[in-house]
Each structure stands twice: as structure tokens, then as C-alpha cells.
Image 1: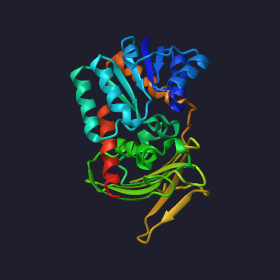
Image 2: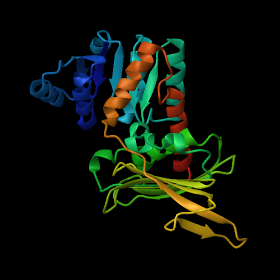
Image 3: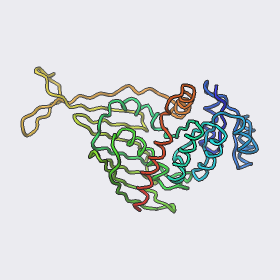
Image 4: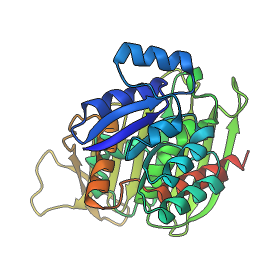
Length: 319
């Protein structure tokens, strides 16, 4: 079992602490939180060891799980890496692309592994169909959330949209060509609702909308590719694949058949893959343990986390 410590015991940090304690792949050593009052409450209520300093915790572990505010990610990661710790770091990887590139370079220099917490990669609705997404040419994502002041310390692009940026970059095998976006700050100092259009060199276009002032929650992505349409509802944990195939000689009487102006007929097939329930946060943490133990590449690398942030920054530069 890998000895692990958690930096940050806020809302998400407490979830990580609980899951790491349950995991069979980690030994939870303890945590550090600069808010002494909160740290004492968490230690008393849950029994986790509360370390007095970051350095004291880092010295006792092999893996550091960074669940602190984004502004402190760089210093936390730098400190851990320089002392030989592998790092799991919540999204976004850092505040700036320069910081992210520095973290990536440091990890390479000190021969440690890093994974970024883009949890939607482990969403069962996505994992059920990701191997079916093949060269999509149009992608549409809607990520809407009711207002929660907990995420307003960063723009909605870094709070919500970056999830979909990560998913899109993971399935489009092409470089970004151009980015266009607009955002509006309604209740926060930074945009609360944003729409972005990402164009890729291979011709693929992705439209993304993210809002944290919606009247309802929605996390839907749609991928359009040759002869198929893939729909992923990451909130309801449902997926659907709609395929177009040539009509067989003797189609079923209830078959759905379309005919275009040239007389070509296509039959529509619906496939609803089985979506297995899981705990995506536990899965991402344990996948990182596997990468360390087996010396394999993490599912979401520091390089990928950096590129996600780079595109997010391009979007925010449009405002």
C-alpha cells in the first residue's frame, strides 16, 4: 500500500480523505490544512492525523493528494515533487500555464508521477462509450449548474468548462487551430456563463457552454461522427449510440429507415450501453496508485492537464 497524505480538508478534501481511508491501495497517513480551526474539527470528527506543517506531512508519505485552492497548487506540488513524492493534483492543474509547465518539468527531473483530477474521465457514462467515439467532427457540450458560492473564486471556465475541455481533447486527435468565446459576469467578479467554440486542424468543431447560474443542473455531451451519434449524460449516468447503416435486403417491418434525396437508404440502430455504477473519485485515485505501482502512464497526465489549462486560458483571453 502506498502511504498518502492529503493537502486541504475542505469539502472535496474530506471526500478524498474518506475514500483514501477506504481504499485497499493506499495507507492514509494524515492531512494538512492551513485553517487550524477547520483542521482541528476534521481531525476530531473523523480521527485523521492532523499534521502541523506541509513539510511534516510530505516527509511521512510517498504520495501527496493536493486538494487545495487552485492558487496554492503550484507551491504545494513543487514542494512535494522536490522531496520525491508522487502528486495527485485536483483540476485545474495550476493557476497559470507557466506554473503547469514548471510542475511538469519538475516531475520529470525528480522522476515522480503526477495525475490531474479530471474526474469526468472516470464517469461511467463516458467510459461506457469512449472506445466508440471515433474521429468526431462536431461536438456539443452543456455543463450547467445551480449557483454555489464555493466555486466562484475562479472563472466558470476553470470551475466547470475545463471538465469538457479535458474530455474533448482526449477524444479529438488533432491540434487546436483557433478558439472563440464570450462570457458574462452576472453575480461574480469573473464570468458566470461562457460559450466557446474550439476549431481543430482536422476540421472538428466543438461548441461548449458552461454556466453556474442555471435553474437546473445539466452535464451533457454529444459527439457526431461518420455514420454515428454518441450522446453522454454525465449527470444521469446514461449513454446512447445512434448508428446509421445500409439497409439490409429484408429489413424488419419496424425498422427506422431514412432515404435521402439521391435515393440512398440508411437504417437507424439504437444502442444503450450498460453503464456500471462506480465512485469516479475513488477510481481516479486508485488508477493513480496502479500507475505508480506498475510504472505506467497515469490516465490524466500532467501534460494533458497543462494542455487543458492552455485551452482554458485561450478561452478566457477572448473576454
